[in-house]
Image (cartoon, rainbow over the protein chains, first blue to last red):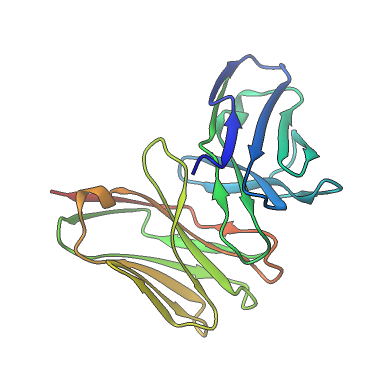
Length: 112
Length: 112
């Protein structure tokens, strides 16, 4: 399901650096989400957006920010990366509430 | 918000046997319950879902049951095959449907 594309797929960086992860979709969905996945903790919601002017915090938004540049693009930024933000990050989209979410291939981020 | 608990965290079965994964949720207003399969290094993919107006749904070897009174739902895989080995996540949408609340995942291993 290459309709949700994340870049980069892998990133290694140093503590204190600013990092941006990008997500674009061709599914035409209004809703976009950013999740973080850690072993044993499942998928935890960072931020979500229902349109360009709508941004909402999720369960673990501290240390992260987002930008919805267009209906099809949703970026996640780490302003000053720290090692405990090392994780697998997923972007997802959905058409509207109570509907399946469709995930990108993920970005594996390592912060040294 | 919603709280979803998933058990067991790991499950090993012999090929051909059945596997059952159980989830409980806290918000009685939740009305959509998807299940995702995540193979190693891949994105989570929807395998089956159920809505609160239905008690059971089947798709070939996979079935999901929902008990609204007890607030739990289960994934049943029959005649397991090695390619069923993956991590499985349950989720619930809470009362607004704006977010997915994921369980912590079950790592299923099917032994040939």
